[in-house]
Image 1 (cartoon, rainbow, N blue to C red):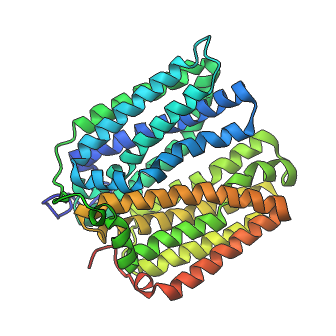
Image 2 (cartoon, rainbow, N blue to C red):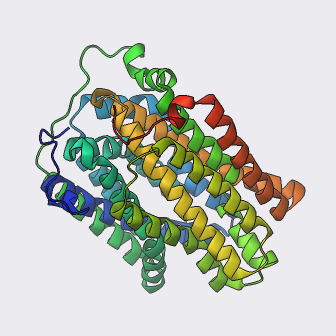
Image 3 (tube, one colour):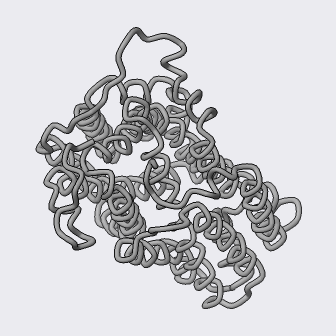
Length: 412
C-alpha cells in the first residue's frame, strides 16, 4: 500500500495523478487489446486449418488449464516475489508466444499442435500474470482510491473487449501475421511501461514454503465470510446466468438477424458495462455496498429473463446492456471488497483462487448453457439460468449476512 493515504485533488480522475498507477493503467489497456486481437486471430487460424468446432473449444481450454493446474503456485509467487518483476517476466513470455504464433502463419506450417503448445505456455504466463496484476493495484494507490482504480481498470477491459476483436479481425484479414505482430508490439510496449513504474511497496510473505503457506489463499477465503461470499456469489451467478455462449443461436434461430445482429448482441453487455463504469467513477458507491451488490445480482438475473423471452432485437440488445451494467456494479464492489479485506501478503494467493473461479465459471457456464440447450432448447435454458441466478442471490443473502451488511468499501 502506498504511504500517502490522502487523495490528490477532488476530481474522480485524480487517481491518474499517481504516476505508477497511470503507467499501469495504460499497460492494462494495451494488454487488453493484445489479448483480444490474439484471441480472434487464433480462433480464425485454428478454424481455417481444421474446420473443427471441437478444436475451437480447445483454444480456450488450453489457456485455462494452466491456471487451474498452477493455482497453488501462482498466488504464492505473487506474494513472495516483487509483483512488478512478475508482470514484466510474464509479458515477455507472452510476447515470445505471440512471435511464435506469427511464425506459424508462414507457409509450410500445417500442424495445429505447435499452436496449442504455444497457447499452453501463454496460458501459464497468464496464470502467473493475473494474480500479480490484481494484487499490485493496492500497492500503487491509497486505500481510499482503490474503488476508483478498480472501476477504471474494469472499464478499460470492457473497452478492449468491444474494440479489440474488431481490430483483430481487420488485421487478420489484411495478413494473419499482422494480427500477431500487433499483439507482439502491444505486449512489448506494456512491458516497457510496467518496467517504468516506480517500485511499489509490498508486504511480502516470509518464512519457509509449506503446504500451509501454499494453500493459505484457500484457507483465508474459507475463514473470511465476506471474501468467501463475494467470490462464491460470482462463481454460481455466472455459472447459472451466463447467456453469452448462446448468442449465435439467438441471433440465427430466434431473432433472425444474421451476423450483423450478432455483433450488436455481442457488444451490448460491454457497452452497458462501460456506461455503468463511467457512472461509478463519477458517483462511486458510498453506502450500503453489500445490499447494492446483491441488488445488482438480482437485476442481472431479471434482465436475463427478459433476454430469454425477447423476440425483438432492440429489446434483446437493451436487456444485454442492462445485464452488463448490473454485472459491472457487482464486479466493482466484489473486486474492491476482495482486495481490501485481504492482507497484502495474501493478495496473490487469494487472487489466484479468484481468477480460477472466474475462469471456471465462464468455461463451465458456457458448457452448462450448451448442454441445457441440447436438452430443453435455448429459451428454456436461458430462463432456467436467470431463475438460478435469482435463487443464488436469495440464498447468499441469507447465508452470508456479513456480506449483506457491508456498508462502505473500506476494510473497517
